[in-house]
Image (cartoon, rainbow, N blue to C red):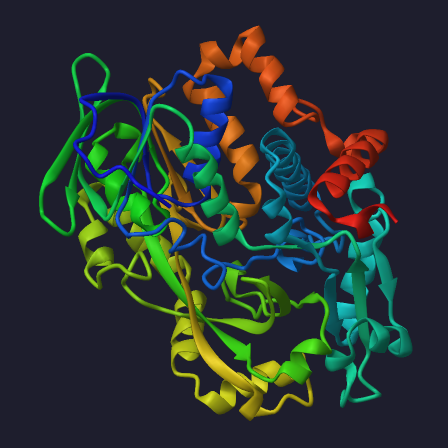
Length: 503
């Protein structure tokens, strides 16, 4: 990708900090809504999507709540709460609509290379877990968003669905699985870079790679002064912007703190790292064709939900298992070990301490994960693939996530799993904090941001028409409209090459 490394313009309408999926989505949306907008993008690395958006660093599932059991918790009365699953399923459908719009608008056929059909499955064992999965299936299939989800306890059928998971398994062990053929695998790294290629071809867009933003200052006229340093030469680039978006993954919290906006008070971050076991045996890789998700261990973070995961990365089929959680004080994979201590301030000290005290099981879990031996990791793999051989797998480092800690009047501080958008009262700056399901729901997150930070323009007939053109289901609830779900999925399947969705 070519870049513009000459002196940045003195003024710009929008500054995007971080060249990940969020900035790419927001930048393209804004240019579609108003082609006259000028946009300046700063990225501390020399390529786009090299941190959380990279295929090796994220879950890559195309999170649609088909298989992720942590999105459907069981209530104390034994019923299944599917509200979060419905929301995420709707949001992923919005993402697919936007990607289909880009494909049609720009004839970007290569989009089909970073979204592929792959069945999504949930797999459990033990009587209590089997009963939970049965109830989950019954609850979800009441919605059109989960129409077609299959449930089975039949071992012969499960053998057909996922042979590596069933071979060598105790025949007396109660097992169950669900399967959604509508599942996808998304290479968010390729998608992000493809979107930035579209963005760079538009007039008024300036890229600055290998530039790290080190100062944000709110001016009296309501604009923002942004200073970034070239990490190669040490030279500064200064711009003035009417709107700033901080989409720097784990690096967003320190930048939000530098902004000084009162809405940032009390926010802290808890970093969680990850690792994968990557299969190196082509024969084994060829025999698995699914994303098989299980239940997370008690006390573990949602990003650590174990899964045996088929992916397409750079045109190659890969097989991963994990992730194994770990702890590092870095906020980015390429960050500094001083990131966590440097983020602690007077206004977030109490929330961070209280959240830490209330999450001691998580701390214990992370310590156990860090101390795992290679034999421990293989033992965890064999719960999902009983006949796994150690020589067929190698350890690979995954991405770094920073979970959100925020103030809470009753508890002092709470640890949040998910994403959190923090915006100034005047809408002039916004930052995205947190992790999963992040990338998969980027389109709906950016739609909400645009409506909040550009309220007058978003309410205009022109922008409203464009919203509906980019996302045909905009403003409607897919969960309550089976006909609309079928219509939307038929279109996106055809455009994105997901032909199995309309068989």
